[in-house]
Image (tube, rainbow, N blue to C red; front, side):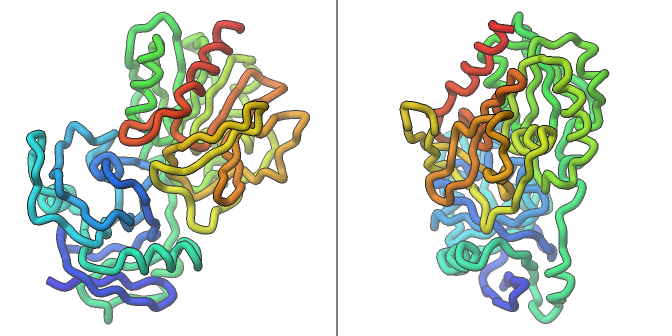
Length: 354
């Protein structure tokens, strides 16, 4: 069966349908990772988005649901160049087509993903509609689509605790990857996870040794309530680690600004350079469409410690007025690089010095 991608600028890609049989409007983004598509599909930071996978062959090692890093599927749609007919892997529990059908997510294969990626790179992220009938596409509706309440959809609804380590951490869940929580537990922590609606008083009531602001989806400018909570937490003087969206909210709480990137960073091989004395370059896993605006960072409040090599955008801050470190990337990715695992070590060192 034929299926189409209609972009907001009127460009149409014709391909083949797989996955669920339904139409969706979403923000179209591209991911440059070679492997880890199950982990990608389950990443809550993709809520409201359709992913174009730049690697040309997808589905060849099948699906194992235990690889999912949270909710099984969070994306709105999945776009690939070639969908493998064979799932060859001793761990495979099924094929990608059936997996997307199970979770009601439409897929599109057989299009020129290189052309689509270059278009998004050159013109910027845009909205699109995945449909079986391009004549039904309403360009005004596509252009007007906005991702809203993404953090609400991604955050836990209940407080829960993972791990039994001696270091007590409170994590404000903005759409956290399970891998982040596992990493914190691996470093000897007991992590109590709070929903995004939790107040500062509720978080501080457990008397945590440290506070973690997780990554998550959506526009940081929509997170007014969460920024208010972060501001209140700053007064506690408790060491803080902020990742992804949490990095952006901590910046907003300190009076800095954020900006939308032209086409975002999504994949496992983004070069990031430290501005510290070593000047080292690290390969990082990233998934975000917004960034802290470097020009708004007050150098008396925070020092920029990481910068993206490709577009020079901010990737990390070390605060001077509070014991806090924040990074835009994932410090240690399940299916990507672990070059920056030392970010966790720096945070836990702050806890020792508290």
